[in-house]
Image 1 (tube, rainbow, N blue to C red):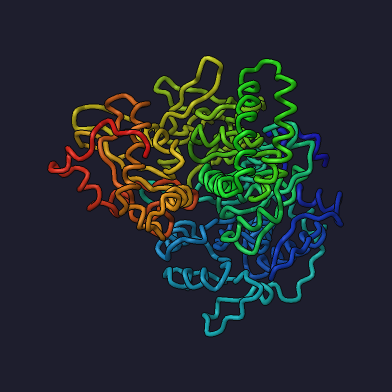
Image 2 (image 1 turned 60 degrees about the vertical axis):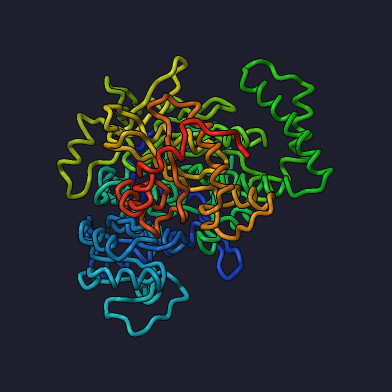
Length: 625
């Protein structure tokens, strides 16, 4: 099978994961498939070794009673073992059920019960305890612990270590994959990916061989460099997430891309510095954190270094203006920029491991324009794309060089994919990589999939040049008590343009006016506070500082100046803690759980609408301190 000859997702209509895996094994058995770090040492794993481990585990699952279509849950941090468990499940004919490794026992209980999983993989002792505390563990045939260092005792009889589960099995990997390839159909469901669950219980999106392969193929259309170049990628997001799973499992089957697994995703920043990836996909928040680190470094230099940096930024602005104007670049400015990039910007990018990054994309949330421009000034070709679990890959991508933020580009350059916009502005998508429905949820499936089209639930606008702009989620519209309907997402995006604000949640349903809860960017705001010698040592101090509050007042005022009067924020509060999956108000991919957020911070929200405080916050605020 000539994978390099595939130019459209439609050409994968009769292809399965075991077939592609076997093709890689036959074509490059001794080539490195991925790299993993353990106990401080990096180790390369060849396609031959990778296939052997997958075949052994898949054979063990079948021997233990896994039937075709049976569900297998995996809960753990991103790791080599997660990858092998995923691939073994699919190649054995099972259905992988991804569970976020930070999930609570209640969330795990829901996923296990809803999916009807018969086997489960626990990444570590920590995840094992969560599974055992879910109330569903006794219904599982076997719980396999992936951590090779695990040596647990006093555990239930259905709990076993990975090595013990595989035993002495030594499968013929090539023969096993060929056999499974003949048994599998591209329409077979291979995984259930639970959506973020911003409201209510999460829905299990069913994905087939075709879904995950055609979805991964979308990435090959992001630019000529994706197909022509060899790439390194750090798997730093939870592998139950579509992006991380594609980076680890399916993209290496169709591209010359090598995944790297650090010791844990908690160490992702250090892993990225060591690996120096050439391909990186992450939500805007990751780019914001890295940018704050680079700025802190640039501003902490000597007087000469700071002067050189400021001069380089002036040249970079001229160079970026030339690029965006679409005119022929000024040769003199271009030469100066190359010197600035080599001597100033690349060393700064190296501080976070981005000095060899060739393909950089962001998705999942709107990218603040100032943040995107900053990375481009430093020479990084950062772009945006749009996707969701239900379409696996992406149907919109910024193809132009040095694009501006505020849009998600144009439809994919693949005739197998179609994108349309309904009269009410909702975007619908049709293509080979769509999910096939929600597990156990027929009505929700009928609502999302109609006549082969995925109804995304996202409202978009198409600009005069054909660029798509996300306006809002269809159901995330705030109706104020005075009859105004506004988009909270659009307002939040404006607020998040500030380098001192990492997240905002607009409040106002049934209220007279709009207010906001704000999460400040800990790194940027702490640096700002320290430069003024303020007595601030932790995040909660920021929320209590009057000077910091005035700083955020000015930032909110800037956002208000760009908004219609009915959309302006009349009052706000800085949250006393950072938003996270652990406190239940964010998903692992940093999407807000609005219902939970409203419940957790109800007392704080009530102070925003206290009539006695209405005059404390004015519609227009002063300049930045």
